[in-house]
Image 1: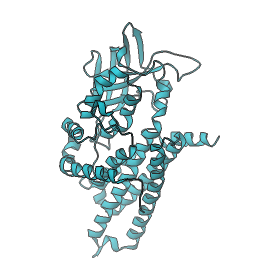
Image 2: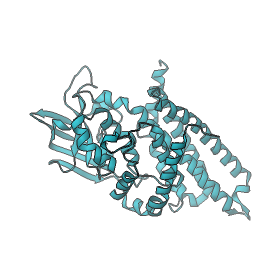
Image 3: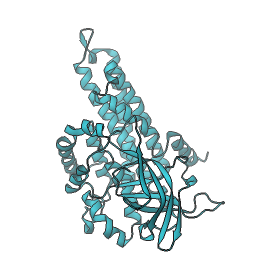
Length: 382
């Protein structure tokens, strides 16, 4: 179906990204998968062509645009090439909005130029070993001591934590027995601060180019000057960016579903079974027709939501609906596509195997499918 959410400027950006991915990412992707991360130079190269600074104000070296459609194009083009850009998506779509919304003038001058240039990498540390979706249960503490906070605790499943220079840590600075959501604060911990330890890398079944680590904080002294926003307001801050965070997952889900369909179509047209090409069998035609239909339905829903996000009208419940639907579509479509590859679909040499492994996490992170259903049910007064 024809899409009409992009302008000529967006399409020019698409060509820029497509060229970069073709030259600088696709040829080296398998090597990065084995290493479990992208090299830092890629972030700097993306900074050189303006990608890392899209949303950063011009006075700090960025482009000063808050148009999420550019972020969506970045995911669409990497998926088209059957690769990902590791933690770039997390930095631009999930973490940078907190800096943009809550950094003060001094912090902007200190961090923004290097963020725009791709020289400062970031992570956000919310999840703890005993606290997943329930952010109100965070137990990492930060106690005020003069001009510092003394930070203690542990975080896990931290995307991009290994290479991160700046980590936004959600910590408890006060306890209110009547309001578990109160008393949470955002602190920016810098790599190398005494007591800050990057622990083991977690060995995931998918998204292997994206490092995921455990972090520990043992009496880390974090200057008050590194606090983002006001003390005790973190829970409300985290909620405000959730629609975009969930949209980011949905964009990737639809783009990767489309990529799965594309690589399966190419395989079916070439593969011979019982003397005939796989694409000639009725079952193959029916399966791919069904996948194509689901992808187009998800794309239509997603495009509507992208427009609403850009216009500032996307509700939390609608973002949950989009994430739920698009990630469930991804699960079904990638599974059906892999089945058509037969045994080859289980071999990592074929991109469909990677797409299959990568797809499983989308129904878990940024809020599980079950959490999305709770949010949607509340919007129905249930």
